[in-house]
Amino acid sequence: MMNRIGRRWSVGLGACLTLLLAFTAQNGWAQPAPASVHGHVNNPIGAALTKGQVKLTQDRSADEKNRKYTNTFEIDASGNFKGTGINPGSYLAVVFVDDKSIDYADNVNFAAGEDHVLNFDMSRKEYIDKMTPEEKKQLEEFKKKNSEVVQANAKIANLNTLLTQARADTKAGNFDAAITAMQQATSQKPDEGILWVALGDAQLGSADAAAKADKAAGKPVDPAVQAKYAEAAASYKKGVDASAASKKPNVETEAAAYNQMGQALAKSGDGKGASDAYEQAAKAQPANAGMYYYNEAATLYNAGKLDEAAAAADKAVAADPKRADAYYIKGQSLIPKATVDPKTQKIVAPPGCIEAYQQYLELVPEGPRSEEVKGILSGVGAEVKSSYKAGKKK
Image (cartoon, rainbow, N blue to C red; front, top):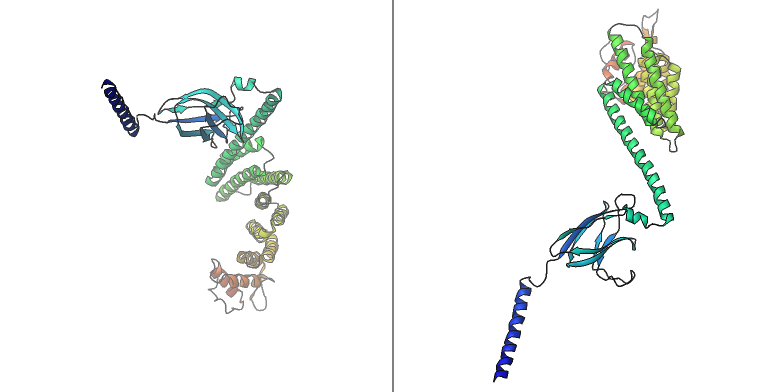
């Protein structure tokens, strides 16, 4: 009897334990909460390791080739990694790059539910000490090159800051500040053409402002102002030379520098030098030749060099026959040479003048200068064509 009771009690106890285990499993008591991990990986020079994996294993007895890893976490471009799903316990954590282990940490304990912080810093003394002499030599060479790159990048960043600020100052009319900044920049990197162009722009702006002030005050041409224009032209020339001498010449920079140089030289009184500069701009960028020749014509016209302006306008329309303003400049450059016929007392325009004005109206019959041109044509008794209407005499 006792044996039967004992057996029944034993069977009943076993059933209760089975039910208890099932109950606790359903309520999560039997399975401890998984752990998570996050961390950062630095390479031997102290910079972030930008690719690779961090793997976890408890299979310490196996060799590296046959070792089984329970968890793998990717290292991102910032050198960070994170993940979850780690069963609590003690692990060997290994850093891999291209399937090759490069660092490790043993006896890393993960508690249930813990978010464990795990960092790898391969610039630590213990890691460096274990390198071979050849690896240490390569590391030192890399550190030196990296240091040079960091310094070069810092220098470039500083120059970009100076350039941005100088352009803003030039646009705002703060020419002295812009000139100071660009003189500093060109002294730091004299082989960068764009810096010289920015310096020239600030100097040209300063010269224009001084010339405008003198004109408003009724003063004659000031040699000091002409010297400012010459300084600007010299800076543009240095920009051209720097670009041409670089490994990757920038034709846009060179064309822009020549174009601005043309303005500076014309305003300094050097008409021949200005024309040569615009010629070089057109040569550097043939696709924009019409624009550069037109700029030449307008600059020379504004400087009172009418013969040179008319010749430049001819080159502009030859490069771009639809550039209406070039025809206007040509007409304006020629009309002062108009004479009065002593017999008829009629105005006689010089050769090419009437044709230039007529072509302007053909291209832009309602353009901003059309009424002015119509008046001029009517004033000299030119034939009125059907494509436009004559305006009032002026």
